[in-house]
Length: 112
Image (cartoon, rainbow, N blue to C red; front, side, top):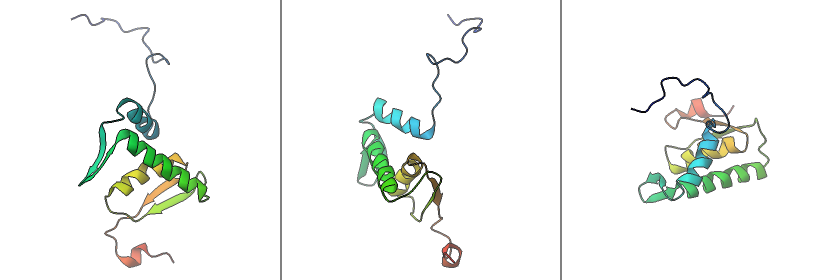
């Protein structure tokens, strides 16, 4: 079928392989699939370019509020678009996302 019998010499190089992290994957998605829908929730629709922009704005806002790399940002948001944006926006500023389950009882979630 035209496939090479021996793939020796085809090791990973910069020309044929770029590892993707979740953040670089979203950046690439915004570049390659900019107008394709990325988030659909009822009437809320965002393309990959818009989603990337919103995540970038969240990261910038967090950094502007003094969130530093390694800090923990906790969210108490149900499965809504804002939570999906937090999954990229928080790590984009270097922080760690701690999603708190909205189904936990109050005593479990309360800060003491």
